[in-house]
Image (tube, rainbow, N blue to C red; front, side, top):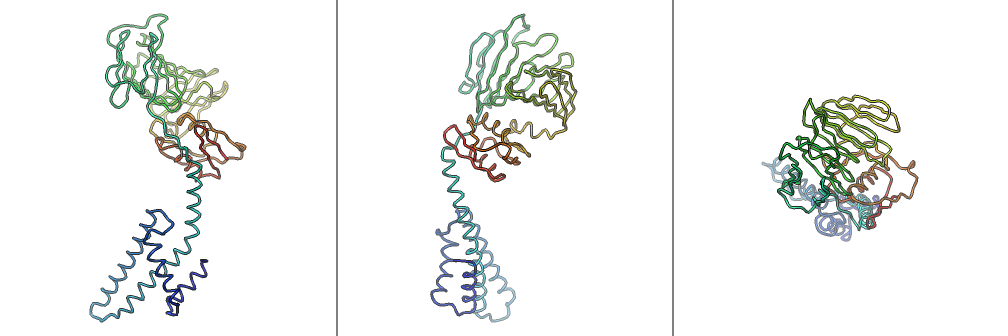
Length: 384
């Protein structure tokens, strides 16, 4: 029924000239479509609409009682008032039908495209000890896992991996490092022997010695990690990646330095760090980010929250390009994206969503903020 037809029907209803068939149509629509189970909206929408209509009717009844405490009210007046409300609701409902059918079609379309949903990542990693032994941290027990070369390794109930020194051993020349590797869809949090806390993002390799030497605390990173470095003015903490070295005494910062990426970003939240690139170095302050691209280092003011969203269990985008977003989703959900369009024609995206939602929820958010569609087929996501 078109909007104009609905209006004419309601006018007939209010004027008292509606046929028995028209009266029955309005009454049936209000009673059955709005308040029963034939409405095309979902249960939450039905409940909300029905509750709102009931509240308005109750308010009219109360108004009639308050305004006519000492008067005799004709049933016709209250009935007419209620019919006007019901009829108005019916008009609104008729006008909304097209919108609900469009929404229903959109939901059905998504349900088909997202039929093979993908679960989020979690605490998954492999620990390779200096002596070559490997421990799958994903399924390992809690408590002490191993003691080796004066180093104790314990897994807490919350998944935190704690390294602590058991004697006064020192690093020997040629000693191999311990290495933690997170896969696609993996992350892990560790405490180093000096008390420094490190959060590792997906597809990250992090290496460190069983005992730091007398001069500094040297670690290596390929991937992304957030550091809260334990302060020790006599022993600088140095993070080496393929394109830079970051030197600190005690601070909070994030490094995004995947070896296969063209860029390396270091974002400072607290303290001060010195970033050494292929040519030159920069000291950055809280709220700043160094960017190494090729041989150049640039420093920009940024909102650090967008750099550590992953550590806080979120995806946060602000005018972010599709290639950048795809890279993050690929690492976390372990999927491959196929883009059937030109990247330069794709919009940028803004928004936030939990990192622990299924992939479909993230894609749904992206579809709402840009003219784009995703199709999930196993571990392959097609973009159109």
